[in-house]
Length: 214
Image (tube, rainbow, N blue to C red):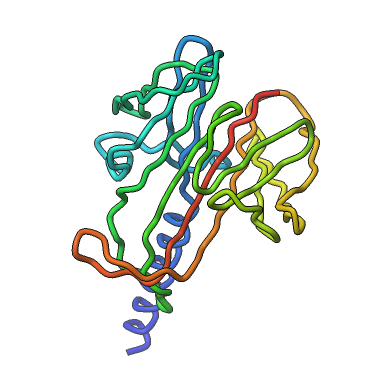
C-alpha cells in the first residue's frame, strides 16, 4: 500500500514538473542581416525544441517584418528541424495566437488557460503584450497601456537570470553586463473567459520576449 502511495506521489510530482516546464517555454528570435530564426524552448537552459517534436506545437505564427524605411510587410515562417526560418529585417515581430487549449496538469491544477506568445527583435511596430528598450530602460505594455508591476526576466547568454519588476509607468532600468544575446521575457495573465476550437478557457496567458544583442 505504501509503495503504491509512493508511486502515485512520484507520478504527481513528475506531472507537476512537466506542467511547470511547459509553462516556462517561450518563443524568441535570433538573427543577423542575412536571416532570422524563431526558436521555441527555454533560452536559459539552452533548450530549443525540434520538429518532429514540441516545435510542432507552434501553430501558424504570424510574422511582420519592418525594413529600415519603416515599411511593414507580412512574411512566412518556414518550419525547419530546430526553428522557424524568417526573412531578415530591421525589426521582426511574431505572434503565435492559435495555440491549442491544454488541460491543466499536476496535483493542484489551475484554471484552463488560452496561451498567446509573442517575440520581438528590433524597434518599431507593436505587439499586444510588448517589451521595448531605450538605452538601459525597458518598457512593458499590454494593449498599448503601461503594464505596471509586471515581472521581467532578463536571461543572459550563459543562462544567468535577473528578475525585475516594472514601476507604475511599466518601466524598469537595467544595464546588460556583458556581450552576446540577451532574451528579456514578460508575462501577463488576466481573467477573460472564452472558447477556442470548441474548448472553453477561464484565463488568457500572454508571454513576450525581446531579443537584445550587445
